[in-house]
Amino acid sequence: MIQEAYDKSQREIEELKSQLLTAKNETEKKKIEAKITYAERWLQINGWVEKGNEYSLKKEYDNAIENYNKAIAFNPDDADVYTQRGKAYYDKGQYDKAIEDFNRAIALNPNDENAYAMRGFAYIHKGQYDKGNEDTGKSIALQDSFGSSFFNRRIEKYNQLIALNPKDAKTYVGRGNAYRGKGQYDMAIEDFNKAIALNPKDAEAYSGRGVAYFFGAVSPALSGNTLSGNMGRAISDFQKACDLGLQKGCENLQGALKER
Image: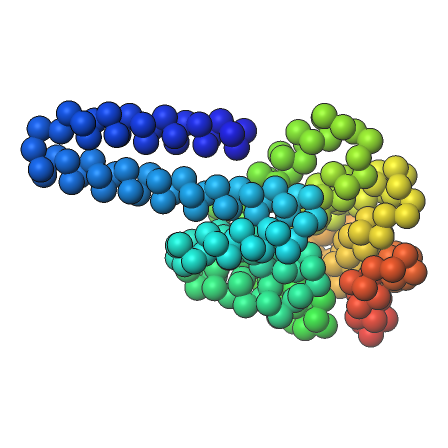
């Protein structure tokens, strides 16, 4: 998919270069040159973003952040890239840096429901539940108006990966995280259950399932009241993730114990 988009952009650039050779005057030539410059810049920026997305899917967050940094350096006004980089920081457990990026994304696009959702999750991880619930509520209100395009795209990517290899626990964890981002905690838990069945030592799966139980417990209105009362399960999953060596699981455990 990425290669197809890249090839299409390359063909467009080659076509513009052909037009440049037959430009009738200097004014037309400058217009075509400007289009070529824009197209090449767009191609380069989107190449970095796509690489960052691929690294994120592989959980190679440092590499993902490096590519997002390059894209932002070329175009510091793209809200989506800040949201993507913030998500990578979030997945690394660097919640303060994640919140900074989500703040930038929201400043650039006040209707970015994904940035609100992720910032809300980051606040909840930091124990700032009022801010977290406010942001997740805002996200859901915006999703009703604009659609959850970011998480839907991630879910579609994971659907494709699962179709190719239904035995890979990591892809179920990734899709579970995307469902969780949409506030669909029941479906998220189903995916984390599948991941754990495939790999009972997957700390990320226990942590993700714990987070879904946790959000359902502290924000039952957001999950249709189906998960309220499951704080005990969240704590159990965080403990398991912590025991398996996941620092994020240990941090989540401490936060959940305070909330209980």
